[in-house]
Length: 434
Image (cartoon, rainbow, N blue to C red; front, side, top):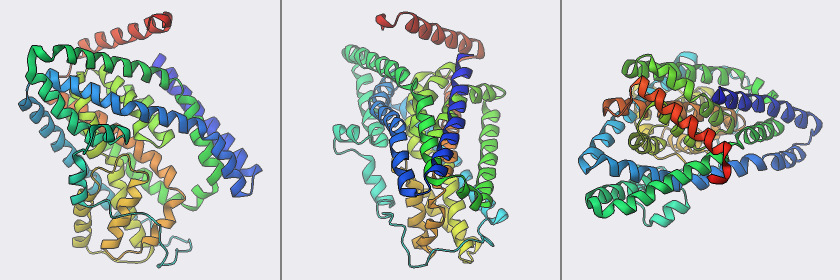
């Protein structure tokens, strides 16, 4: 009930935020003035996201090192890595294919009824950083301190894998250090609990600021495109749930119930990172052992962005259709394969989906100016992408845990959830003892 109450508060905050944002939009016709007011309102959501980013690095490092050390050996780590990667690659291909299929079936770019940006216009997005060569070299950190400071999740994962395997190899000699890092992970999770109490305020501020600047009329202009995209996302949610049902059975619906708060949080803030701690907590309650979730989740944030992947093919073909550029089936498949490679590691990069799309458009002689068409509604689209990413990574973690035999039975999971609840109640009753 407490979790449902938190989800309701987030939903209420979204509705109030939309109402307040629309009032600002109508009372401040000058967009510059509206943006200035929105800037002050968004301060709360900016602070919340900064706090989350502050926690992500230490949280990923501590939980991942402890999880890997408990796996026992490098062979176990390699096995889990291979299984997770196999799931991620398959899910990415399905997401890209679905985006390609739906864009061809629905054809949202035909008869758009909007003025097209001049072909020579530029969206001013840097595309050079999204090459496979740069991504592979970027995976390995030059400095652990630098990767922590920049919140480079993939680099933190690479270092943590080496650290965890080495710590496990030390055996008893490494026990004191392992215990210390385990305590660090508990401290980070405790801080996360405090930060999450600000979530409804952050959601209110994010929605109010977005609507204050853009208004709701922009949604009407792009109603067909957005409706087609969200319909496609809905189908992707169905496919992800079906995949979860195949491996987890009816328990997948329990998982979806547990992550509803994380889903709405990532949707309202348009940030997958904002939902990370909540998803970790939901997976604990579902019965996924921490040594699996703390390993698969950070990997998923770099390799398993299902919503963003689908958007890449959907938006690329939308722009081609808007400019009446015909792409053969072979060309579209080539585009899909290129996106499969260039989209990896897009997490943590501002407007990363747009950057990946810009790089792809250049390679197929599609006007980059087409991105200017969707820039105005990208925030609303990013909400759906981020929420989908949260769902995909949650199901991936649970399925890999099932494959590894590290998923608790339903009765064990229920007992574990009751223990987590009692610990949280004890913390609230005696905060001075925390």
